[in-house]
Image (cartoon, rainbow, N blue to C red):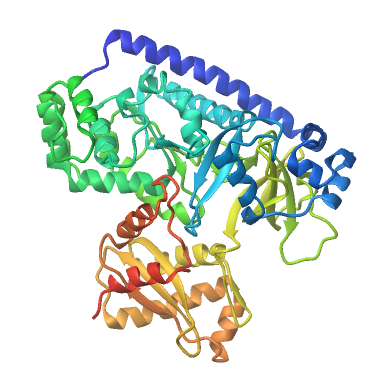
Length: 564
């Protein structure tokens, strides 16, 4: 059904107000980029002084820190294990003034790619960069709509906002949940999701609800997700459940066998009406269109897709571009972790990220070379790799998040970066150090050369074989014969050797055996993501681990490998 006049006015007003605030935030980021060294030092020293009487501050003598050099000399590098006991004191006993003088208001819960569950404390100040980033998104969306003469339109935001409560009464969940909870009154105005869904997650078929409300709304102007793979998964679900979704839209109700609490089903059905006109329009579109370009047929106002589609997600972005057709822009969102919001994409269709000026204090450890101390952002060099170390406003001090980035340029004194790899996602055997950056670039060239349509992939360093070898698990649209597997394995090794000469040398001297291709059954990677969710990971945090590092995950892929 078309948007009612009063909804149009409300939608137009909220979009414009958010866009104005987002424009201010973008200008502020650019201005701060010009004087980043002085901004960063003042932020850090003010923060350290404020927290000198906390448990952590007293332990490391914060009252004697007056310069960045003092801070680096007195405070050690840390990992999550250094905080586990402190976090438990806050989460279980409600103790405050442990890591920060500010009150902990939330715990960002993360399982990461490794599956290790972490609780990251969050104070109010630390949420502001997230709020400002959402406003920046709205500014970008508004600009893209304006270019196309679109004045109002809703969006699909796939980020879930379910929360739970710790023993001490502090809520926990995704960091985005805390930010979006505060905007729960305006989100239904600018997205297709009704307010009744807010707060639900576990025990609800969210994929159905996202697909149902997205298809029902002809006025979708944007789609947003954390990773581009979240959106390709949703489109796959729509393609596989088209008839059921259209029938429910026509009938104006949610099927009784869709998993959710009955109270939620009742509340949702109460506000639904039969929409045979939209249902018939959808039937016609799915009947007459291939998947290529179908999204702009389903949603004529669609003008921008937001989600991380760079690096290892490039293949998913490529698939989304095919679904969208021409005239839909892509914005690669944020580079963030539960510990801190690190950077925003510089602009639409740009793969570089601008490090934020007020989300944390950043240090950088040069990769592959010895340095007397970590560097500050204005000291970095273009083309070099650096491991990121953060001090966030919630009480993680000199925290190694294990991410490595490559500097691609500068904006004033502020570096532009691209994610390279995670330190715990590296193959390092017999002197060969293969990173996800090597693997991602090699796979891109491999796909070009072979012509395969690769849905997803992962690697396993098979050290049980002598000499060791790489097992490449592929999910493709095509059937791969035994002969092709041998040829493709050779091509893969060739491409990987071009990215890392040491791999090629080890193959030549027999220290490494040729790689083997393992083609897995269709939807194996979907099963992998469902397996991760059963382990407690949120759908919004799951990304394919490019290097298998657990026996359970290896078994899953081995069990789904095709034999021919």
